[in-house]
Length: 275
Ligand code: AMP
Ligand code: ZN
Ligand code: FE
Ligand code: FE
Figure: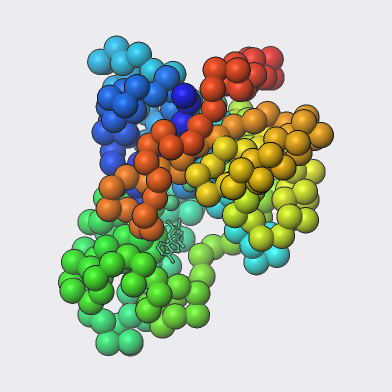
């Protein structure tokens, strides 16, 4: 089994790239892709560890870019991405900065709402990486303002709640260009989470090369439909768990709870090799 959708502490996961790899090895995965949100910062550490320890696991460097189309979240996965790509690096650095000021603005708004949250603590939870609402939520728990991450979202951090500040907007086309330029294979993430299936078709038309068919929240019927769609549109088939680690936001799925087998991995590898 190859789990091609995994987050680490480089974005909002709770395990470091090293811990994820060791866990993957422990449970006997054949391979995995690290696909952190809008960052490639965890990839080098993972590659180094595999090299140093001689871990026998297929590793695919990836990214998951969050974009928005007509107010709807569209996540685009990029596989075999070159983490040294300059254009990508500079755009991703901008995102880090934008996210930091957004988090500061959220902490300000929470102050107005009567919560005296320490921004330093928020940053400590982010671990120097991309700051997001899950890190703010953890700081809120730490300071005793809420009991759980979902409570933090429900009362303060969700859209329309007192601490909410919208994130920078990234259009699918921009994410697609960046991934393409960095040599990545473009895959539409968890299409079942996209409300408008018309948007799914629109994004596929923008240049998707694959579709994430196997995903913990996809029903048997959705899997069947997306397999048919993959055949119809000649798309690669991928899958992954969207693992975020223990204690992460939402009760996420276990590592290896979704993925692909040898056949689909071979197709993906061959496709990339011939690009
Ligand atoms: P951000 O990118 O900072 O806007 O945060 C988005 C992240 O927050 C998502 O990737 C989820 O992991 C998490 N999240 C979003 N909504 C909720 C929710 N209702 N409860 C818990 N976590 C959530
Ligand atoms: Zn996440
Ligand atoms: Fe996603
Ligand atoms: Fe994800």
